[in-house]
Image (cartoon, rainbow, N blue to C red):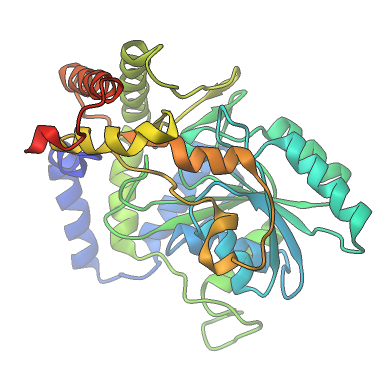
Length: 384
């Protein structure tokens, strides 16, 4: 069983995909160009954003957004403690400082009430003023932007949406990527909308930000690539990846429906057995991952028993960001919800081409493994 079955998707789209890729190869425009421009227009229309800038990765999307907003050395940025390292890494790359906020234990997303408390504590105990917030739509569900946007507005904070895992998700009828000044997404192959390499995009609301992002994407260029107005990056999306994404995009809604159906099968089969994902009222998830939680002393044994039966399961993420070695000695924050999540979460196979029978196999394997754990059996017995 595949954790994410990219080959099944390719086989379904193979004729159109190969035709599109060959058209790029024959056309000779391999970096940016018409294919990328058309993708940007289609993505903007899908998300409902005025502007879209396609870039080389989701990390570049975050980095360029901070650069466009003028975040630099010494600036304080607040973000969730439970995400992939890139979310906080980009702050350090620009010389900024990051402070972490705890998460809602049900959604694993940044808790707006913890954010509000953190801002008040910073202002009360230091002379520093935070500049920005990066909120993450973890596992495919939008963060609580109704409240987060309100907090950022009251405190004059730049808001960036890290929508790397949530393409196609919605909050009260608005698509992921539309929230904050910048919405950043990733097209890493395993994402709900993935290319065949690295890729990403930034969504924004003003022409000024669009112009700045496009300049920063190509070494801070002005009128042409030899007319450099600022320090930038080489963060261009190539035309082959754009062609792949343009073929995949029309199938995204159908695939999201299949992901949600799979999540429903899991929900029904695992109810009362493990902690299943909670999608809050007014939201739909893209289910980039289907993440359960079990007692910390059972998680590793469950993962091993599933692996012994040919069922891959992964931990996203085994260490909360504030506990990573890169921050050791610098972060003394106590964030219990993020720390507990890192010890208890486990993501099960999730992709649009998993059948109901395969879903039932996963459910049965989880149930069997936990029963054996309760009975005290060797977690590696099934592979002996």
